[in-house]
Length: 175
Image 1: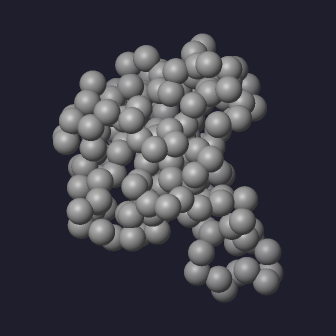
Image 2: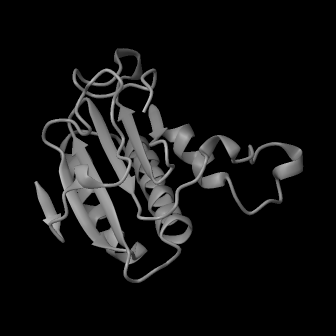
């Protein structure tokens, strides 16, 4: 389902895809295209939180997923789209009782996530960057970026030992 501007999510430049030939998004994914504003994403985030509650996620899991979503959106709006008012955020999500899937894409130039310094190291403690990515990795079971660095796909499994549902991409597959 596509909501918003009606853009095709799979037509993004350099989309995330699976080397194993899996779909870009799991079956049942909702795709939304919204203006490049954090406030616009908060409305969608609240809908996602309601779906997480209905699917039986506990408060701790909802908190972690919300934090990862908020950080990914902030990165996309501020760093990716550079706060441009003409830019669009592309968000896809799928919530099941087993796992939550989130994909946030921007229209920016991208970045190299491996170049982001570890914010927990003493020499980086006072640096203003890197914490969002650190938190996203801490709270989600799987996180990966497209080659360009303009899209992030995150999965939170309720039972990480079981891995993602069949047909979803796991963290051992390359983008």
